[in-house]
Amino acid sequence: MEKSSEYGLEFLLAFDGRIHHLEEGYWIKFEIKRVGATKKRPHGLSYAFTLHAPDGTRLVGFDNAHGVPARGSRFKVRPEASDHWQPDGDRSRKALRI
Image (cartoon, rainbow, N blue to C red; front, top):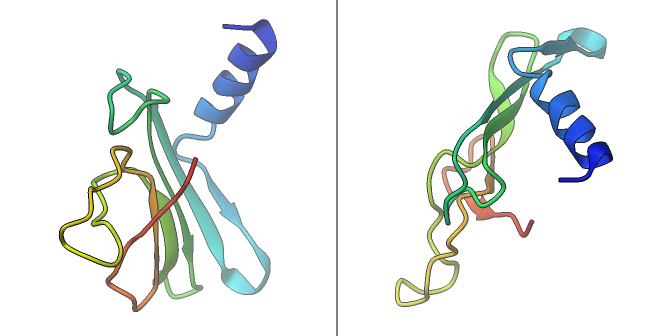
C-alpha cells in the first residue's frame, strides 16, 4: 500500500468512537474498525456513520453491517458488498456504489 494511502486509512481509523457536535444540537457518530477483507467488506473496514437529532433520534446512517436486497425484483442478484444507507423513517435500505 502506498504511504499516502496508509496515512489516509490510519487517519480514518482514528475517527472510531468520535462524536462531532454540529449546530443546533445535531451530532454525527463515527464507528470504524479494520477487519479482514471479504466480498461483503472488500475494503477491509467495518463502519457506521450516523447523523442524530438533538434528542438523539437517528436521522440517517451509512454502514456495511449487513447485505441489501436488490432493488426492483426478488429475483435480481444481490450486491456482494454490504455498503448501504438508510434514511430515518424509511425501513428500506439503499445500496451504495463504492
